[in-house]
Image (cartoon, rainbow over all chains, first blue to last red; front, top):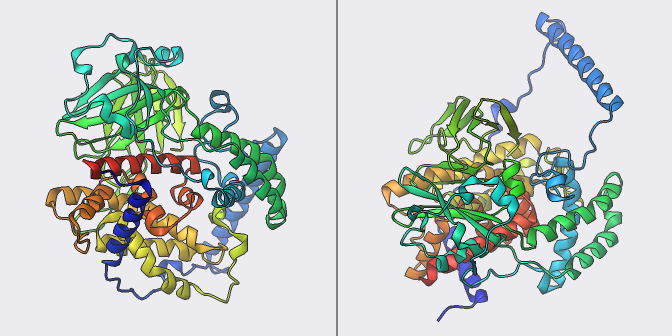
Length: 370
Length: 164
């Protein structure tokens, strides 16, 4: 008999608590890091004079630049960071909000949190426990126009591996899978990389609209607690934050990306919208073959993808020694709308920049800020 | 300074608690969090030392250093998580979980260990740490909607694993 959601959650808490308590923590005495000691230049030294001169020059350059930006109308703080463009997603928040935006959002989300504590229906809903529905229809015209891999006729290699059947794909959280359009885009180092279009690729479940109204009421009550400098921004941002939350939880079409090796191991995720693909945000990291791999979708016209990994300090396995990894740029071909690249070294994280090029070498797009 | 983690109602008056007090108070829990995220005691201690150093740099400027520490631990544990996962795959040795008596609970713990990193953070933070969605979103640097989505996927996956 399947245990209830509440019982399962209680078991999760118990197991994690036992595992956490298993560790005998021995507190290491805190030593002030040597690097924290601030170096001071001596005013009389030549180095001091150079530092002073440099600081004056830098300050002057910054002031001139700031004046130029002000004169030409700089961007407002809201939405100044990267993320999906408003044109693509309406007036939604960027995926990675700027610091200022986060500061304002904090108060909005806290108000929503407070509302959800009072109303159980506003809390996180348990996941669906049903097999995904399937459709014999076709994905949206936008998606088909964007991804040639979906337009090509299906072949025998597009069939899901034996260990993965449609009914088992419920863990992806998607519904209305367009089964006639499932494609194995790549077979790479012993793993298949599949593109699975879905009528609803969003695994989130929506909460009642009243939750947002309750959140807004809490926010207005707590307004005096918010620093004065932020109040106007918070109030202006609130409808946009709610719109984003509603969008995040609403059904929307897109694709799932899944990678499986022949033993059944793998990873997958959904909720990749056409806008995500167009803006270069449609990629995943996983290790279906035991090696950390980045793989993603690109539109038709992209022939090569260059990923610029910044220099990083990573920790070696076993010895745990820290080593510096130099910056590295990797260019790979996009085949069947998909690029796959091995991470230069575990721990270096996502690339700082991705460049899309057409077949003739022309730069189509440069994407930063993942 | 990550000003996004400011919490006006819990401002600790400077002078009332120095970094040393904060370190002693938070160290134990931070190491256990890192332990649940990396599966390695050595890595957990390293991660927390790194995170504490980061907090130290900004301690005087942040009103509430706890969320800052949580985010630093989650970020620092991410790379270790990958290292440790690969190492564990090779050695097929599960250091953690010996104190969990029941086989089905050990299975659940192993399944948590196999989750993608962000899903694992969400599960550990929510069910062990008791963090709110907002706090998890802050630690992961994403939107609360993303946390919901990650939690939903993680729970589905865990249910599937343990129900098999």
